[in-house]
Length: 83
Image (cartoon, rainbow, N blue to C red; front, side):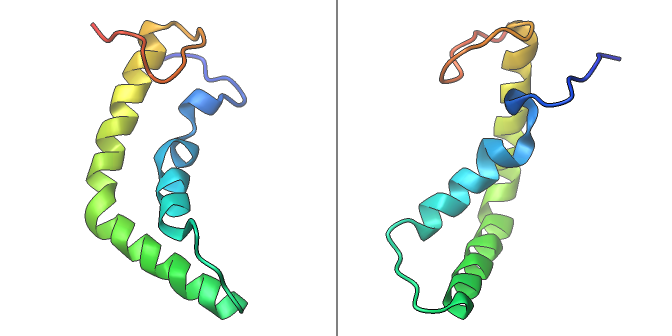
């Protein structure tokens, strides 16, 4: 078992993919009411559940492998090579 740091941005799954996906879906939208924000967010979540979840898990796995190879060192843009 590996010790887990109290917080590491490299290991936070939602920051890694989900919020990027949500941001892309909502980018450029103008909302008049909070109900419109909720409706658009629910639509983005449904789309993510239907199309993005498997891809998210695969990319997260690959990212964690890069973190292991880098032994906790910083790497930018996911360029640490995976053996």
